[in-house]
Every structure is written in C-alpha cells, then in structure tokens.
Image (cartoon, rainbow, N blue to C red; front, side, top):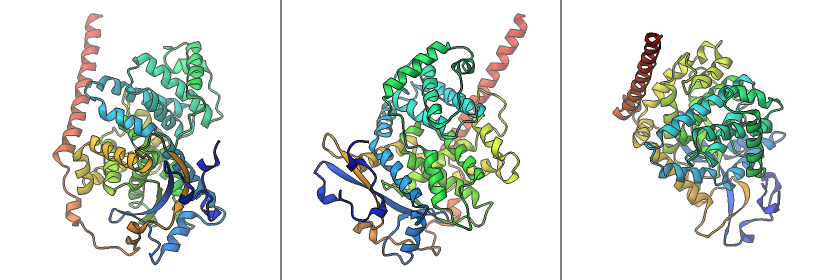
Length: 454
C-alpha cells in the first residue's frame, strides 16, 4: 500500500501522528464530516458539537462498539474516492463535448449498459458489477473516439474483469461470445481482457454508489428500524442503474450519487413504513449544497417516471433495469414499479427540485466539478491526500449550525412545493414520447416493406 500517511486513520486511534502540524505546504489533510439530512424539510447541515443531541447523533453514525468497522469502512471508501481523479477528468470531458454531435455514440453507450445489466441479471452476479464496469468504461473510453465495435469489445473486457473481481462465478469466454451474438470470437475477447488488465495495471478498484448506499442504510439502521433490507436495496439499485445508463452519471462522485439515491429511496419508504426516521446521517469529504443533491435526484426521478411499466422490447434502454427490480419486488404490491413511478412524478413537482431540473444537467455537473477542485486540489502541481479522520468537531464556520430534531418552520410554503411541472420538464418528457412514436412507426414501415417484398 506504500506510504502509511496515505492510509485511513480511524477515529478510535485518538491523536494522529500525521496531524496538520506535520504536513508540508503541498499536502492537504482530508476530513470526513457527518451531515444530517432532514427528509421532512429537505435541509442538510453538518452536526455541530454544540448541539444538545450531539453525542447521540455521533454515536449513532459511528456505530460505537462491534460495528465500528462500518464507520471506518465508509471513511476508507471516501479516501479512495478523493484520491482518484476519474470523476473530475470525465466531467471536464463531458462539459467540453458537444452532446448533439456525440448523440449517436451516447445512444450506443446506453444500449451497451443495458446489455451489460442483462448479462449481470442472467448470471445472478452482484449488483455492483455493472456499475463498476460503467465507471471504468467512462473513465477510459467514453467520448474518446472509439468505433462502436471496439467500444463494445472493451466494455465486455471491463465487465469480465469486474465480474471476476466481485464474483466467484466462472463464465466461459464462449458464453460471452454468445451474449454478443457471436460478434466477437472468444480469442478476441481473451485478448482484450489481457490487454485491459495490463493497461489498468491492477488499478480497477473504485468507490461505487451501491457500496455507499448500503453503508448509509446500515449506519442509519437501529434496533427498531432496519433500513438495509433487500426491498430497499432493490429500489436503490433501480435508481442507480437508471443513472448509470445516462452519460452524466460518472460526472458525479459516488458518495453524492448515493446520497441522491438514498433521499429518493427513503422518501418513498416513508410512504409505506412510518418507522423510517426523518433524520438520516451521511458522511462526506466535501460539502455539497442541498440544491445539488435534490437536482440530481430530480433528474433520476424524471427518467424513472417515464420508463415503461412492463417493458417488452429488449432494445429499450431500461429493459433489464426494470426486470432486475421486478425480480425482487414483483410480489410486493406497495413496491410495484407503478407506485415508484407515481412517487417520482410527485417528487419532480417539488419547487426546489423543479428549479434545479430547469437549470439543466450542465449546471449540476459544473457545480460538482467546482466542489471537487476546491476540496481535493490546490494550485500546486501535485497534492498528496494524507489521511481521513472523521471531523466530529467541525470548524468555526460550522459550529453555529445546530441540528434540532423537532420540526422547524417550513421555509417554503407547502403549496409552492407542489407546483405543476414546468414547461422544461414537460418538454423533455414529450420529446421522449415523440421519439418513441417515431421509432415505432419506422419499425412498422420496415415490417410492411419486408411483407410487400416477399
């Protein structure tokens, strides 16, 4: 692992030998801060040590005792996320790309991701396999000028490597060749896997949204309310997979994407289970504004609200994502995909969410990019991230913020939160439906032409 200064310093170790006084000018200590999200009023604030319930909050998220490793593992993932520049590099590339000119390649990317999720489902692989593959694919290949065939072959190579990393399932190369409709010979697949393995140089471990979601659910679970359950995980994976199909998903840190997914999942769960707490705690190394969290959640909800309830066309980009969710929840009426879609429609109608969607995805990506640059990088040519220590005593600017468990006066009028969907959102949904109708008519014409030709 190299230099010990780059390792996690757990909160239980007391005084760290690598405190800020021992750091050189080009080194920046990395702290993780506990934030409290209020689902009732959509507020997000760091926990202040001057709060009356500070010790209760801190002990709940730290999982003091035998479950201390959960808190420390979350910090380890945050450290891994901060030390990698994949998200920043891809966000810069995504912002510089004229998406209208790259529309064909991005549609091809959506088809590839849908195809990979289908392979994951067929072989009963772990949920994070497709997510991990997509993050690697975007970091190294997406929007970099690969031909469609080469792009698909490299995507399959990443998928095989990640599947071996997460699973003990042994799928032969001949089987992968059949998944591609024999477009690739097993020897070609084996060659690209070896090539990518050498190209990655063992560096293919990433912080993933699904891992953060599971850890946040477990950290917020209590003896009376267990949140880390299969149904909630299936709902979270539905939102994550929908996001992964979009090209902008890899522009956001995994911890931020996981938080937006967590907000959607818990808000939906509060309609079914009254015991879900309205105060939930998360760990970040950055300070993301609430508008960014809700804007990203709004985009995911807007897409989910428009996907087919029972997809029958495998060419649909959300075919296998919906199938995966129905595999887990098809016998639960409260968790049906139609209920999820209705919830997403109501969520998008919130004034703050609607306002962020109207600003556009480029605005959200730009905000994320600025936050990453300010939090992880300095004007110097290189930076060493030294250690991660949970910041249970925030700085002086944050000490004035106090989390209060009692409901506060709502700063936005209740009627304003349920405003009708703005014209921007309606236009996006209408354009999607129009595109589907055009494609359907084209298919009908092709069938008629074949019939007349015969």
